[in-house]
Length: 117
Image (spheres, rainbow, N blue to C red):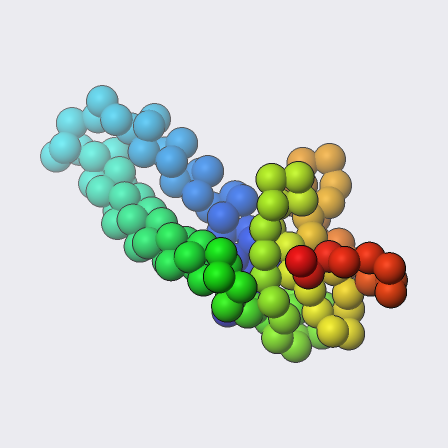
């Protein structure tokens, strides 16, 4: 799975789906908003299940994704301070950046940095 796809699905897509479900919470079930809420829940539940499986794989260091810059496979991890990140052999350390954390940036890994541990 491409890192960029999952990065934006988790950051933006999940937030929009949850906000939509809460916004339509009191709509009648047989209305158009009620049906749209059902569709949003049918999208959100599999997204959460895939995220849970990927989180377990990430915890054991087995999750690998495709680099958004070069397309090679690299190990993915995450932390509270840095969010979701990956290490690519050619591009270096890839993580979120920008004021809202919605930009994917890369940094070169120096010899004395130990990012992967």
